[in-house]
Length: 200
Ligand code: ITT
Image 1 (cartoon, rainbow, N blue to C red):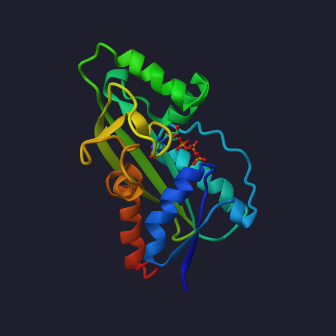
Image 2 (cartoon, rainbow, N blue to C red):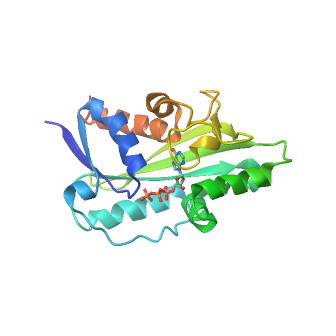
């Protein structure tokens, strides 16, 4: 039987990416809507990605004993003191959406030589062992001069991956999953689940 796990997110793009990566390994990934779970709203005010992912997973753990994963991620831009970082979602909503956030970033970086950036993802797994487990993935790259590509979501159109030599929005989903912060964190999670006989 497939190993069943819940992804504690309101972001349908994350759900799609996590499913694509984990489903081929004998896992069924449920979104909150699939199980009619309505966790309390979480204020993501922890000091780091792990803390925020844990808050999201714990809100769902109040409602079920099933294994839960949560993802907290962000875009760190060197010339912006590694911002927006853990506040990437907040930054986008304060700007009025990702499109506006992207144009603000491009404006800020206009005359900057250093365009280095990285995406960071922390996945937390709850209800599998006596303590929460953390899996981290990092994708390095730089910020493009303008947005490129139609795929992906969020900040993908301006993030040029070192590995892919193009933006995540120009990459196909499979390509992005191989090079992305989320893909790398989930590869570590998969290793753990395989060792424990929960994934192939
Ligand atoms: P949940 O908290 O419900 O999971 P969220 O979208 O609010 O959904 P985060 O708090 O982790 O997720 O915020 C992540 C921010 O970084 C948000 O603005 C995303 O659009 C962006 N982001 C994360 N992963 C990304 C990716 O793979 N490509 C582009 N942008 C990404």
